[in-house]
Length: 453
Image 1 (cartoon, rainbow, N blue to C red):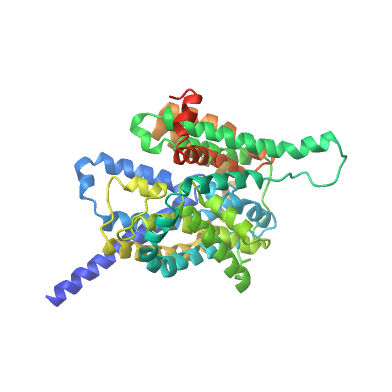
Image 2 (tube, helix red, strand yellow):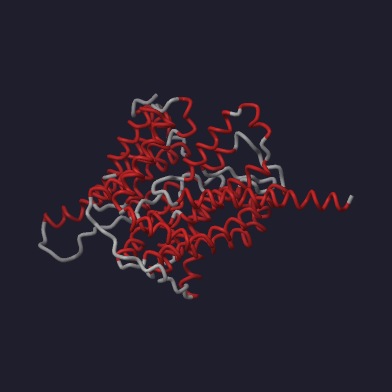
């Protein structure tokens, strides 16, 4: 009996480890495709699951949990590669682009990628060793303390994000009205971007043109247009060429920069993982302001940690025994298939996160070198053209012609920040504004005023 029990346990452990590592490997490969988001990959997988009909009911949490945990860890860690080298990030990686591009233009893109990977690994350690043991104890207290205050917290975040936009014209030059107009140009462009994307968010929430059969991916074409297509279009039309990259430029992280960056990213990612509507990019921005980040290396480390804690932490909280916290798109995508079953499922997910984190960090260097080789072999523009074609094909396949129309409109909005030098984070008005209004009870009145009800 003992032998049978040991054999059964070993087989179960190997199955869980295999699923987690397989999901991680798939996530790392998908992340190297510019503009391909992990939620698009999960959406395709869920389409296949739902197509199985009754077979979907037989999928256990021991399968979905490790697989999705590995996918999220792998994609979130390796997403830094296109974010830095090809400048095509998702919304949570927007803040890594400025210092990342600076490193890439200096031939140190490999170093920037590895700094974000170091931050991601630090985020995994903090999640598994710090948050995981404390979450079952303190989650009820957090719910009691913050459960009724999410609406005004979200409004404060919106106000801070808009007010922290700054003029980018400098202090020199001819004074008077021309200088004032140049200073206010980016600020007005940021406000316009926020409210136009917010209006699009209300339209998609109340009168979405996306077919009902693709309703669970109704935001996909909008996000593709806001965050992916503008980068790729600018890559195609611009004549910028990256210098040769030093694939051996990473020399480690100083203790002070690594510790400060990891703690700041952990705080920002934790805030984003808990409060609805707040993404990893916003959490990273808040963490950077709160900790007064001035060092580029610490900044990149903090953004890597923030991304991991945001995506993976929100998923992990769903499995906390007795206090599951449904946050993040990944949770909502799998909620119709499985429900967490207590301590066993929680420990399985934690083990999967740890295993996937180790594999993802080990794959970062070879994957980055492979992408650098592809860039030298095929060229910056050709990769961007192929990526844009892939994004358009996915949008059309999953949402049809109406999804393509939504992507076209959102691409126009997403082009405002790079053309007028405002913050790209303002595109998140598509989530922030409708969510804040809904949490405050204002959404029906606003929708009625807009003629959507």
